[in-house]
Length: 101
Image (cartoon, rainbow, N blue to C red; front, side, top):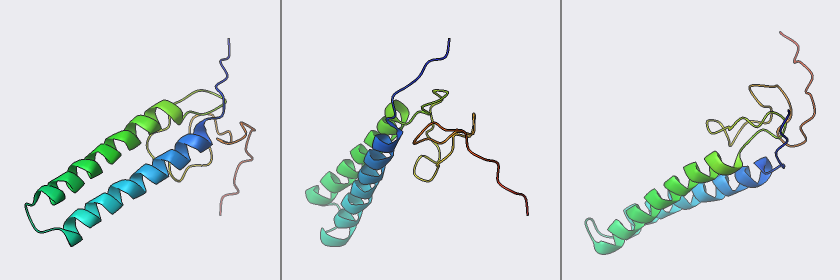
């Protein structure tokens, strides 16, 4: 029996991008604007770590291929085609093979 997952890949990819940007922003703010070993810098570092952990959780929970259901964690920000079934991650349609050069 083939299980079809709803298309949450686009939403998961967008959330992962936002959380990764938040982690980078919190880390840079902590490094550039607060003195070393201050409570504000520690808070920014912990916030950055929380954003990174949330990015991994979102990628693990929401980023699945709509056709085969495989979780896609590595490369979630750049992939358009499922590495397992070679279908589009946005529509689930079969993708044409690329010509070799």
